[in-house]
Image (cartoon, rainbow, N blue to C red):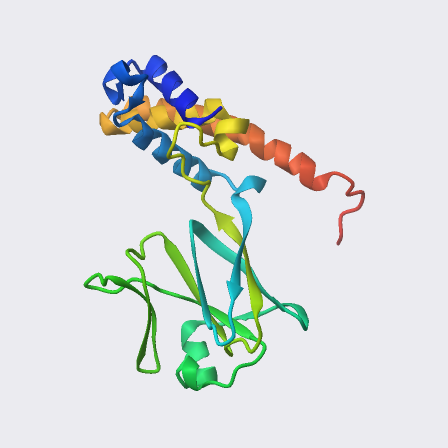
Length: 241
């Protein structure tokens, strides 16, 4: 099912006709907010295989960072160029500063060996994304908002055109137009509907109603988790000791 179909069902189940504009074909008037909230709740509640994703970004010669949206957790980073593909080592931001000790512009380009996760937000909020105040130098890129982004620094800066690959847990793609679909809306539309109804009850501050929906959601998610376990153990005939 797509967003438009989920929204129609949500209005039918909730009775909240005020959340759409009926005179223009059930156009959104607040319903999408609850659907989006429900989807993000489902993403956080269960680590189904669809939560795993790879983000790929091109890197030019001299690049030393990458930013990407919707990431919940980074599990690994690989770097590829004409010399091959290598998993690079994770270090802390402080360890990265100690290892290199210079601003990236002063570091000799090479094959990146290390990466670190770096906070992007400044306070007060800045109009630019701040990659880091790296050994006293402000590293920033122009953008309108840092709130959706996760950032990593990779050093040394690459000496060849390359590809950075990030494996991690990512939020499902946001449903913004009526034709949009996600893993939840296609494979488990009933769960997405439940999660949206849960958030409506939360907005009422109806603890009992919200708890009832959450219990139903967790019961369904338990079945999905069991299916995933069956898939994971398929073909495994011996437990290693």
